[in-house]
Length: 319
Ligand SMILES: Nc1ncnc2c1ncn2[C@@H]1O[C@H](COP(=O)(O)OP(=O)(O)O)[C@@H](O)[C@H]1O
Ligand SMILES: [Mg+2]
Image 1: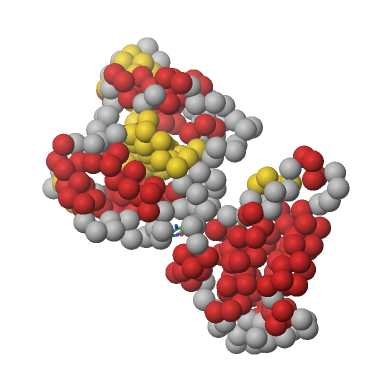
Image 2: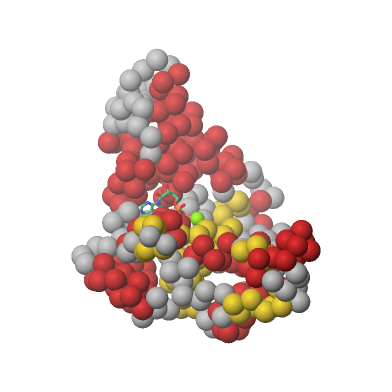
């Protein structure tokens, strides 16, 4: 791993190594410093703010690896594991194949089916929503990280520990397991938040969203600004992410296409708002009794237009 880390280090020291992620300067800095020193990282942040994009970006910076005369690109050593309550130790680490065990003997190497973790050798193990996986799996993982082996069935298996371990967790996800303190102690935490400015978020949406018809800059500003206003609303507990901004951008284009137009107008945006946003937000308990997510979105949109969108008074107005 030393060479992989060293080579990665050189790339990390280049100016703006994480090109695919816009903004997030502080998170990038913390991440670079953790990676340069070969430490495991836990990225803490709400869904849809670029955590996966950032981790994949690291994989692309990894040097090619030679294995049995074949070149393996960094991105192919990026192993993504989705944390969930049904994820088992066997999924991650491996299992004993009963048929092969009969053929080769229960303690033979051939009887062991390798789990996902082996593919991350000299690469990245990206563990999404680590806090969603059962405690048993957390413990097995801890043993692998600490000792480089784990016990599966009746025998000890050696595991590669020469990978970069990046996990994510949504801090507001309370429905799940806690990450045990001993496991948490293996990580440094990098915090990520929603895009820092309207300008950055506009750029993210323009770079990543589908472009089917023309979207006027003013209308794009209006969409993103509206999403950002919702994020500030104290009554909203679960906030709309960058995926919501992307959704609004694409769906308003869909509405324009349906109407046979080549450019998005205000009504297209208005007609997309509920379908894109209502299910993505969740209200605080104190607000829930008084109104629904749709009510809040409708009300906020109207208020927002009164203060920010004076030029869009008439339905269907083209800017
Ligand atoms: N800072 C950012 N830079 C570039 N793209 C971003 C950024 N934040 C969000 N995105 C975009 O938003 C979408 C969701 O990002 P993703 O990395 O999957 O989020 P997460 O893993 O945090 O849920 C992707 O299309 C991604 O390109
Ligand atoms: Mg993700």
